[in-house]
Length: 420
Image 1: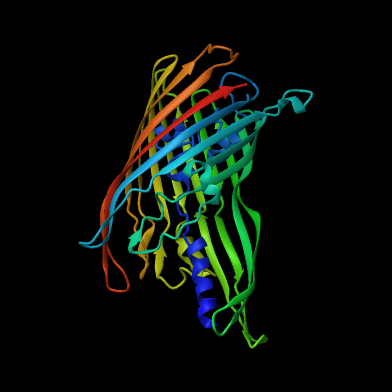
Image 2 (image 1 turned 135 degrees about the vertical axis):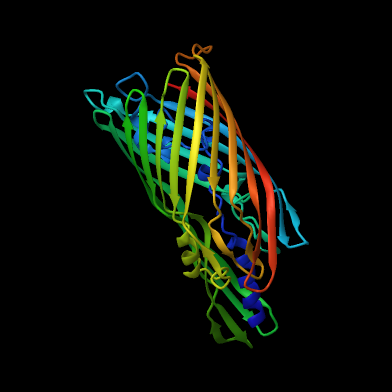
């Protein structure tokens, strides 16, 4: 009787307990242009992925009074080559991310009698070659787990951007997550035979706000973006079991479970893109990420993690990107960012988080085809390669073990953008 209920709980834990702390837009990037500039995208205009980076700049189109429409499709491949685990007994980690990315900017000028800069944006990233919609995994191991890499992830954001006055643009939108509840019905005898088994799950979207401000001058763009915390969660999972003896109900064993399956921290990003000349521009950005809230979040109704002694802290991420335009149709881009690990205490038991500070260097190219066949407007192709170098780390866990982790990750992202 109790054994059966306990097994049911373990099955549910294995199904939904692995938190997807990776969020591809902020970890790897959506736009190949932004990714090659250290993923510093809050001051970039004409960006079909603007609903994530800064919805205010959705309404900006260079050299025109109103925004244009564009559609981008891309592919991302991220391959980690990590070593991690108990000191002297590490394992190799090489689970890749293979994601399709889509970005859209739709001009809504035709809604007004007098054209007015207003645009809608939508971005989507579907990992594991779109199989992430149905992919759950239990990554817990005595060797630890890199929970910001290699874990399947889905990201959706939408937003509106509009010109307010002069060079001032405002944008609003949201990141979309999932919250679900589950009811499991089970009757079991003392011998372990079960009947009347059923499971019901209800899911609904959860929305984290995104607010952006943009200033667009001829030589300088300045952008600020606020993104609210997004938590994807499952709970309550009602796995109460009805015990049966001799065909009669004996007792009800209550069991209610809660899990967090995805987390994006609250964050603020401030960036500036300075076009020093027709040949050269610099993109600077600083992000604040409220990771200290994560350790508090898992203490609230998360059966898999609330007792594992995680401790996280807020971090600041500086980013710098350089673009060189030797030809009117060619751009060469370089970027660098440094991100400190937010994990001060990494957990214990079989829930140890392997996480390191990281240096990220990127190199990219952009090619514009001014008169593509069959199309009336230019076609853009952008490609970037990023190298993540983890700072080697040794850390002691509360249960008396020492874990080590190190390695590097290769990330390639390409996007093709069509205007219409």
